Every structure is written in C-alpha cells, then in structure tokens.
Image 1 (cartoon, one colour):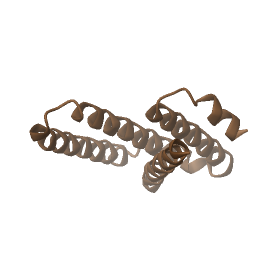
Image 2 (cartoon, one colour):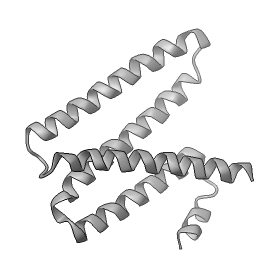
Image 3 (cartoon, one colour):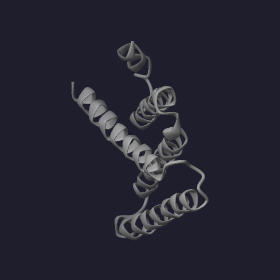
Length: 131
C-alpha cells in the first residue's frame, strides 16, 4: 500500500515528494500516539509541525540561494539559518513556558522524527533517482 502511494507521487518534484512522505509519516505517528499515549500527542504533533515547517523553510532558503551570485550565497544562507534557528528556539521556549503541552520532551521527539523522516525520504528518493 505504501509503495502504491509512492508511485502515485512519481510525477512530483523531489522536494514535494519528500514533503508528502514527511506529512504522511507525521500523521501516522500522531495517530498511533493518540491511540497509545494520549498525553504526548499534542506535544509530538506541535514538534512535528515545527520540524516540518523548518525543513520546508530550509528547502526554500536553498532554492533561493541557488539563484544568487556565488559571493553572496554564504551571507544569505548564514543570516537565514540563524533567523530560522532563533525563531524555532523562541517558539519552543514559548510553548514550554506557557505550558501549552503536557510533556516538553514530546516536542523534541516530534522535531527529531520529522527530521529523520525527511532525511530518510530524501535518501530513498535519491536512490530511486539513480536507478
């Protein structure tokens, strides 16, 4: 079933396919968590969405950097990297400070799973491209 879903996305660009794979994994993990450990679901989902948005933002930075002259790429990417990092840290800090989730570690777990899913899907897509 998963293989069939991947074949249906074959016409999409790699970043979109990776994003769809990431969202699918996030929804699946959140659903399983909702059924097994309801207390962690909100934090995990918040972390996963935050991780997903970070990856999309990172892809956007890379895409825009590719259109810049080589001598300006380093400063362009570095400035946006730090902005992305500090905004993400600020959002996590705000969520934890306001006690918006039951367990702060669930946010970290969500971000981590999102990143590992993105890396894994990109590796899979790269290997598929080489065939």
